[in-house]
Image (tube, rainbow, N blue to C red; front, side, top):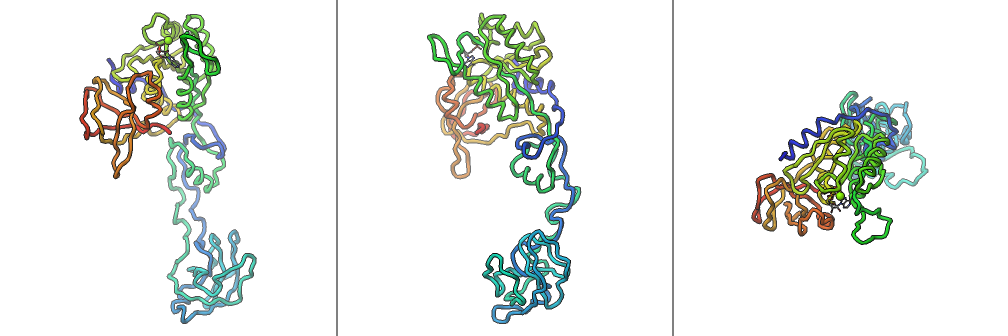
Length: 410
Ligand code: AMP
Ligand code: MG
């Protein structure tokens, strides 16, 4: 039997990041940067006020207090978006709005609340004079040029999946388009005489195809474009036709669930072998021991187990890292959290991914199972918010002992 880590390693050798493409910033959420982003300029680009108030020379207001106001002549008005050219000299001030450039000569800003014009009405003209009630330090209420970012500084690395805050930063830098890796195209197929599409009424002996939905959603969550060529009956011709249909869509990966075990009607294995190659592995893992990996007409092929929980867990363990590599992601490992077991937990010595509820209490995570761990029990996966990971060789853990867990995608 192959260890999980060995199987993952062998699979990853077959994947490299896809080619970079350009996308508009609006379309860039969740995409993976194909080159690092550096600051094209200092930010802020100019010294500006962080408050609404009056730009002054700090040395002119050192004596200011509520009892003894310092009166200054207002020599100008600086709304946000303007570029003042006049100077503020000794005994002078300029009304200034948050974000507006500090005028030449001024070195600090007194908040409007510390002056006699604390109640401003929109549209009201600047006063001719202002009384200052409080001293300010040099640079007080001023955001200096380059205090956030300096020209040339690396801000985001290549391989970073873009988050909402990254898009804000990129817009701030004026990057309307960026280089990201092309999204992986994934074709998902299912096979089995028992399967009916979700729209069809159930018939005796049949079940609805659920893997297509959970696996497609996992692939979408992983940032892929998903194509669903459909379902095949357990017949060689039907399986061959469906695989060809999948390959004709020119995906980067074909994922099949079911049909790769040793059942008498499992044709997927032999059809793939006749049109490519297939490694049929027994992985030391629970759930999801059988795993097929190879290529169909040159396209990487995953044959996941048919049981819904096995298919789901195998996807997270083997397919998601491969899709991450194709997507150009820098970090491959799903983060693990340490949990304390609330109940005794048994497994069979295979590396186990057990459905669990993890709850935080007093700053620590506690875990218990969500019921029986049969690999067809999809509801227990729905009740879980985590997979508890037992390393191989561990058969039982008493309550209070520690384990690791993956928090499941939301
Ligand atoms: P197999 O790998 O074909 O032996 O299937 C193993 C188990 O998974 C059987 O109980 C199948 O009915 C079930 N199964 C296979 N494919 C799907 C699917 N797409 N959705 C739900 N269950 C499935
Ligand atoms: Mg089957």
